[in-house]
Length: 584
Image (tube, rainbow, N blue to C red; front, side):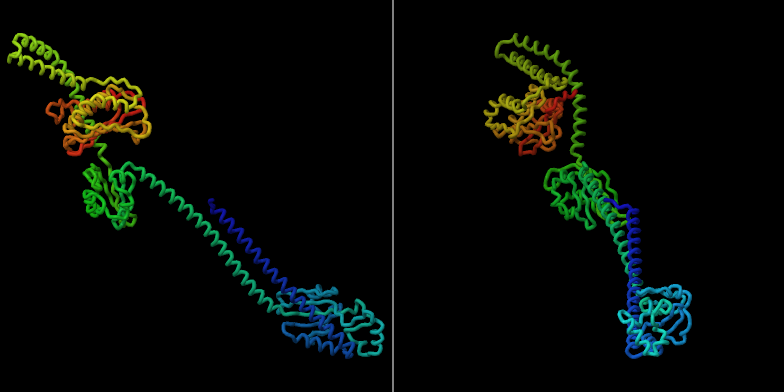
């Protein structure tokens, strides 16, 4: 979920309105509570004055002077501004301030107060009046005639002081009604209300700040979440890109320890990442690579430097190495990075191109030379047979003629092999069980192998192999050459193993022929498929060249692994999909 800044601003505005409404409601509530409290206090004072006046008049025969004194003494209590009684015209009959007796109410007060009810009412004086007063008033009722009307009238005849008493009339009527006023000081309540208002304002401000902080925090958290998500996505993207690179990538941290090791580097070096991470390059890597570190420390660029490296005691690997320093924006060193590119395939392709160029030249030459040689050979062999017939059996001359014929036959075989090598391959591809082809070729050399004490092993993977799209006759010729070479190499016996299996990549089957012979010298490995290269005294040097040509014409590949004294292994990879032969 994403939060727009406008949503947050709108929510903050709503929060502000809510807080202001609550604050104003609290202020009005406090004002209402103050009004209610002062109104009840004023009502209690009015009742107290009425009760005192009633008791004094009836029991102690009070007159106007005593009621005035009661009003003055009651007004002496704290927070009471005045107590007063007026008639219906608004003239003061009694007042806590004697100097105001006989005066009239102000117009602003009389307009509100001269129509009182039987219940207490109140109003606030004008704010310009100082001090501002909370006034509670209602009709003054010092005498009660409930059920005692005649008794009160009789008593009034015997009480001359009641006849002129302004607080008493017999009988009472509207013109003789009195109004009592209580003026209360609102300053303490105003102070308390101001304190409460200040507290309300402070609390509202705190709530607003907390609300704003909450919304900002929500916005920041959402921003942080989105930034973190983007960082995770970028990190995952970068990690996937780096791990998918076809070149090896090794990175070190500030301390010089290996911090990153991608799968391509693992494949090139044959080293496990868990054994590399956290260690220095000198502890686990080849010396030539470690020799680049001083150059990086001097900020010297290393770009596509070719070198031979050996990892974990394995075979030497040709590498193209680039290296650089990783520096942040402040110019501080973050680490170093090494980029390794395996040149093995490049070297192999280069050798393949050179070999094909050489074979193309030799093939063109061989076709012409073979044609020119074969005709004279036929003549030479015929003449040798003719002259041989002229001599007696067992004579030296006849022996010489026979040697000449045999040498002509040997030369003719060499020319035939040369033509076989130079002639374009014509393949008849069909789905074929490679295991049957391998077994068939083994039957042809089994007798020779047993004669030399060679054990033959034919092994296949447990899974059912797909059929290879091959020319069985040509592949049999290829395998027969490899078998015969292995048998010849193991003159004193040994083991020849033939294995078939599925390749890791799709649409391929693998055929391996290995022996326990003396092996091939390292310097000769690069030349064994070249025409006329041989280590055998009587070999022509075309057998393996023809094998290579047949495999390539099937769009397959052949590799050889050997070390002197450990035997030799040929690995053939053949397609199973129906592609046409290569044009050679």
